[in-house]
Amino acid sequence: MINPQLKKIILGLTLPIIICLIWQYLGELPQLAGLLPTPSKVLLGWSDWIFAKPGMGLNPYLGTWGANVSYSASRVFQGFLLACVIGIPLGLMIGWSRLVSNIVDPLIQSLRPIPITAWLPFSIAIFGIRDFGSIFLIFLGGLYPIVVNTTQGARDIEKNLVRAAMMMGASQLQLLRRVVLPASTPSIFTGLRIGLGVSWTAVIVSEMVAVKSGLGYVLWDAYYVGRMDIVLADMASIGAMGFISDQIIVLIQNKFLSWRILQSH
Amino acid sequence: MSNIEINHLSKTYNSKSPVVALQDISLSVASGEFVALLGPSGCGKSTLLNLIAGFEFPSSGSLKVNNETPKAPGPDRGVVFQEAALFPWLTVWENVIFGPKVNNIPRHEYEHRANQMLRMVGLEDFREHLPVQLSGGMRQRVGIARILTLGSQILLMDEPFGALDAQTRLSMQELLLSVWQKIKPSIIFVTHDIDEALFLADSIYVMSARPGRIDRKINVPLDRPRRLEDTSSEIFRSLRLEILQMIRSSHG
Image (cartoon, rainbow over all chains, first blue to last red; front, side, top):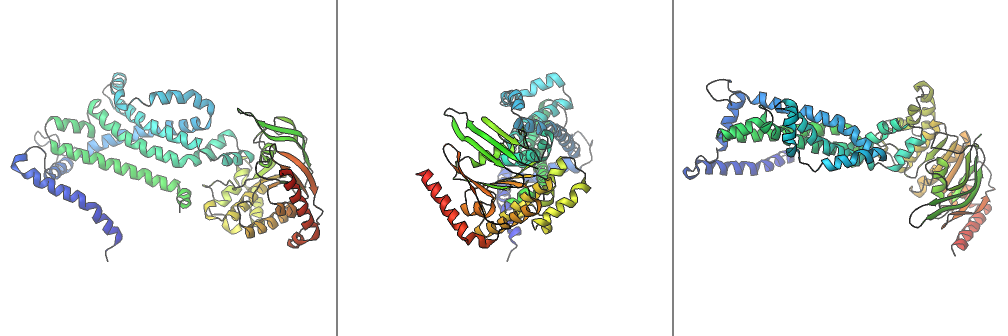
């Protein structure tokens, strides 16, 4: 008997391994030479990019992986944190107060359809080729999903929970903090997870154009100098970072929503 | 101490075709009295309760609680909701002390009382449980304990046992009666169950629908404390029949 957990992992790995083997085989055919680096070449390039001593020769992709990952991650962290700090209270207010909703919601709804990529020239014009240009885009990309989902969560609150709190003498502020906020946490976390995904999109796009470091910058730069192995390694790195940061949110979510998890059993 | 006076009260919902939810309601509840509002769904009995609670406001007529017109919900009028309406993210204990906490009452002042009330409803061993881990009857007991901890002199109960199975409902009724005997709050108890109203209340207002109005007030001349055996007594059965006939004729 094979462990069911192990079986699941093996099943999940089967398809990627088959694809890599076919890719490796096709990549080594003389007719296709040079079109795409093979998986083994990508792994080799990636490992040099991570582990090799920097500054050896003219290869700018030696040992700079860690620095670039941390540039991108720290931008995402700052922009996303800003989006949380502004987006969650804003969403709660819009969802809770009709007045705030009438004042703020039209603006948000009319700005929301503008894709964050369309903000690039604006952002560069205002903030220049500097970190904050990138952080602004990440913030904006994360903000909309967080606000919209938080608003929905606050609007969908069970009427009797609010009435119960009012009956016990809760003030408006206490209602927001002690009832509306916790009742909205499931939708807030939905917004956070979507927002984080958009934030990673935003960091890559902005680094391609607005700053000169990070995974997005390397991605475009490597493409220009024809280092497709680095391009692919970079893409995989972005995916891994997105996955890890999402898992962190899930971890926090499970801590906050244990009552919710029990509820669905 | 706590009384409710309602005179010629009406409630109309203004929509395209205005709906008269309540028409010319007059009733009074003396301090410590147990009153039942009995009627079919749509007779406005929950609306009436919401008006007293201060969740909604009358269209005309007067509504006084302790000689004042309620402007908002407040701890003096504790509400027990149909589905308990406990905060699912808080434990039993945190739910029970929610009221004193939002009113900034220091812990040493409410702790003893909260413990006492939890014991009274038989949940002292469940304080760390989340509402989702409790049965329907236990959730309602938390709902009762939290307004008793709050110190409400008026209890507004909106079909609190309607969703419970027959056996649990009976034990909840007995529990409520014993709590009421000990603390003597005024209770307005909304129900559509004739036996429940007869078993619990001093007086029953029988309501009918479209528009919601009070048909009659019936005094229940059963002695206190009431026992299960009372439900098979001659008075009980004849009152039940009388109410049934009244409801039927008003529907005809």
